[in-house]
Length: 88
Image 1: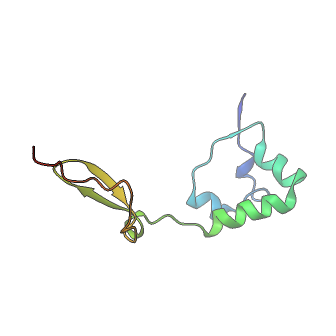
Image 2: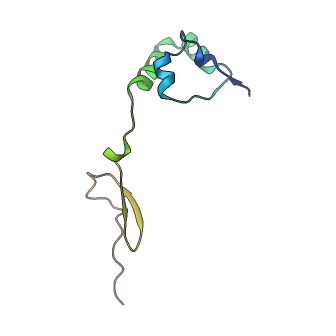
């Protein structure tokens, strides 16, 4: 396995996409995908051009005395919600 950089070619991957993401490529994968599977390559690049991850919109960290849990803000019925230990 050797590292390649065909994704740096503007004909292979739009510079605007390269500016948004960091890539590590082997075996000229970007150029091969573009040549062999153009429709799938279009779909991949479309996702890379439009996707953004904004964790503070969907992730909440809740720290209690008993545990640390990660919840979706809309997940009120999380089965993994810790319960308070019963008093013995």
